Length: 307
Image 1 (cartoon, rainbow, N blue to C red):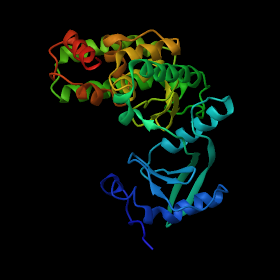
Image 2 (image 1 turned 60 degrees about the horizontal axis):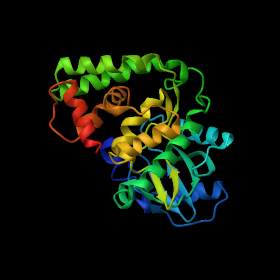
Image 3 (image 1 turned 120 degrees about the vertical axis):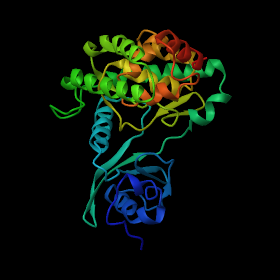
Image 4 (image 1 turned 90 degrees about the horizontal axis):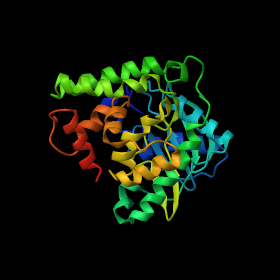
């Protein structure tokens, strides 16, 4: 039987998390605890955590790397289930397994059917893209309406947003400056984002990328709630535009309308990127010349990549 190494860190986790033989005993215990049929695990799409498909269930074992994801995602699924938020997998069970001196938090979810937009988006007509985006917007309206499910005082909770705004904007500004963006441009980005410091925080998904929106005909399912947090609704836009909707601005506008939110436009996307956990990498990854000369050039770059 394979054994985990004595030490697990970012350096070796990527080579471990998809190892079906290594994780088979843990997956078997999760299935037994949740009253699910025994099945051999099949590794899912690589991400941050170890995800395995087992018949009609998906088992997620959280990386032992000190991340808050297990607490956040399990709280999110519980809150969404209690409120009847649609389009999500069903929560089948959760808990922790102690093995070889290590704690493995887990969650068991129903398997959902669909192709990620990473694969299916190019084949969708403009009309179907807008329908998918509108379904995402309707879902966002419901998910954003959830009460903060995190314990009082949690760093990502409702009452901590202004401080989290300061942390995220500083982090993204430093990353952009390190990448060669001018201080004048970064200052303009910070000014554009400033109004979001006082915006009302809601419970956002935070990672509506091309791997987390699954399309099956006209049905949309949404997965992976591990990056949820309390933040303004605009926090969703960068990952959704450049990820889940594959740069389709018309679809983004259909999503915003269905969510009851103003269409953001390129300046709004730039501002919201500054408050996103991965905002700087998203801006740096937008097609076109980098670094842009000024704020107008950046907005033109974002608008062009969204066509």
